[in-house]
Amino acid sequence: MSKLDDIATYCEAIDNATVSTDSAVCGILNSVVKTADTVSGVSEGLNVFFLLFAGAAVFMMQAGFAMLCAGSVRQKNVKNIMLKNLLDACGGAIGFYTVGYAFAYGTNDSGGKDFIGSSNFFIRNFSTGPDFIGWFFQFAFAATAATIVAGTVAERCKMAAYLCYSCFLTGFVYPVVVHSIWSGNGFLTAFRDDPFRGVGVVDFAGSGVVHMCGGATALVAAIILGPRKGRFYDEDGNPLETPTTFQAHSVALQILGTFILWFGWYGFNPGSALAIDNPDSAATAALCAVTTTLAAACGCVTAMFFDSIIDARQTGEVSYDLTMAMNGALGGLVGVTAGTSV
Figure 1 (cartoon, rainbow, N blue to C red):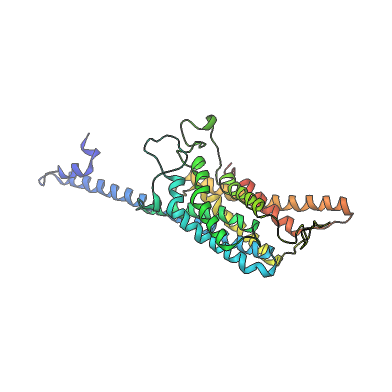
Figure 2: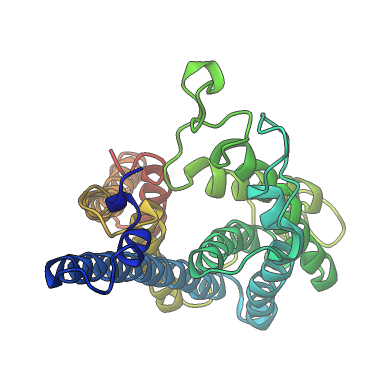
């Protein structure tokens, strides 16, 4: 190793009587090192701030789900669904802090593929900004997966049961899915030299990991709980000839929730680049913003007009369904999440 490979050793080796040229060189080298450290610190801080913004935008989706659910249920159940959305965030934070993150991104000693992680419980080994902001960003995703179920079980799930579900989903179910696909030790991951079936599962921002996980959980919950009272059967248990339609409480809250969710997706998809301090990551984040916008717009227009065409053929009259337009926008956002960087 030469003197220039270790600046500190080189400078210490300079004799006090040495000509000033060596001292000048030493000073320049020290300045270079300090500049490099400063640039590295700025780069790290920039990435931390980027994930802070993205995670906050994703967490803002909790408000979007709350408004969407509040607008979709009957007025008498608004307070109930609001509390459930709040419990999603609280239960999700507790579950993901205690064991969820460890199961999702913990490593093993062998370095091979495994079912779940086994380290970093209670994030006790974290000490740096990137460590803590990484947990926060991933928690926001876990909370999103949990709150997907809130609308499905609206008006027919007890509060204690819902809190238990929220903790269990973010503490075990969701982390298992995350570990299998996004962790370097997962059996389905693409981030290994020996990926699953030579390719691995590629899900950039979570169409399957987050949204399908929450959707599958919602389906199970709906099957277990069954329909709302009075929806398909009367008070005596006799089937109704025509299912009862429960009118939404507030269309204004529904559209507000849709726009908040759309906004949150700009943290969800571009934020999944995980960094912004280099041209490649910046380009990926920017591309994600464009594809996210187009997916929502195309999904909204396509769903609304297809519904209008079908309705016109059945009734002979043309109508435009706002609910279908909102569902189309959200469906487009969910669908593009996996391949939004392409």
